[in-house]
Length: 196
Image 1 (cartoon, helix red, strand yellow):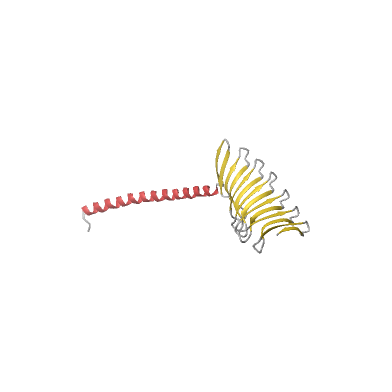
Image 2 (image 1 turned 45 degrees about the vertical axis):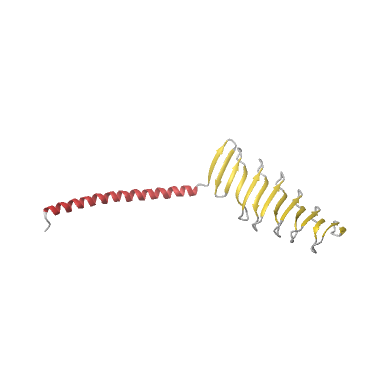
C-alpha cells in the first residue's frame, strides 16, 4: 500500500509530467509548422527565376541561365553563362542586341576570342588551334576565312591568305620539310611564284 506522503509525491510527479508533455506537444506542433513554412519558402526560392539589381544605368540579372547585364531599355548587353557547347563564355552585344564580341571555350575546351561586325557576322577570332598554338583568323563580310596567322605543328609561324572562294592564294612560313619559304597560287590553285 502507498503511503499518503508517497501518494502526494507521485501525484505531483504525474502533474509535472503532464505539463511537460503538453509543452513538448506544443513544441512539436510549432516545429512541424516551422518545417512546413521552411519547405514552402524553399519552394518559392527554387521557383524564383532570377535575382535583379537595378540602378540608373540598367540592371544586373542573375538566374539559372547565367549572369546578364541589361541597359535601361531592357536589352541584354553582356551575358556570362554556358554556351551551346556547355562551356563557359562571356558575350557582349550592342544596343540593338547584335553580338559584337565573345570570349569562351569551344566544344573542345579551347579558348576563343571572337569579334563580330555591326551585322553580327564573325570577322575575326583568336583561338588555340588544333595543334595547340595560337591562331588569328580574319573573315570577310560573307564569313569566308580570308587570312590566317598561326603556328604549324612544329610551332613554326605561318601566314595564309585566301580569296573570296577560300582558295589558298598566298602561303608564307614553314613547309612540311621544316624549310621556310613563300608561294603564290592563282585561282585554280596552281603555284605561279615560289621562294625558295
